[in-house]
Amino acid sequence: MWKQSNRKGAEAERYFRKWLDQHHIPYFYISQDLLTPISRGLKEVFNAKRPDFIVLIEKLGLIFVDVKFRDWSDSGSFTINAANVNKYASLQKNFNFKVWLALSNEKVNFRKWYWVNITDIVRNYRPGKVFRNFAGRTKVYLAYSIPVEHHAHINFEDDINDLLRKVIFKK
Image 1 (tube, rainbow, N blue to C red):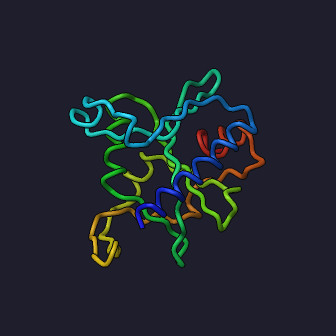
Image 2: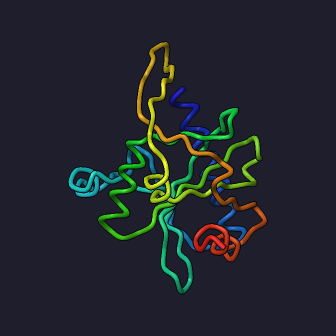
């Protein structure tokens, strides 16, 4: 299950990078593999998590983006682990950089990305218990359930201006 999840996450990151490259959006990719160390200060002192991408936006600055492969539930919601949300909220609070989640999956052929700001999650939703079966054992953790339709989406054809209008400035 874990390997499949990692493979799907890597596939989502690949498609997201294709979108960035197609529209000439500058970025830094931050490898998440186990051989790439994370700062002890970031992890231990600030209890923060590194994003997948730092996206540079001309004349505006930068945003952190964590790309997630997510399937939607029958009710049209996706779940995000509350511990990860808290770590990204710490990153935002302590370093004043906005953190966004960009979510997609193969059902939409990775041609539609749902964007959710960490601040919106913390302000507008409450985590609940999630029960998942991993290798025959039930794991219980807290997660946010977030309705897809409440958040802006960017199509693969959309460019940086669409991202700014629909997601960053919400117009």
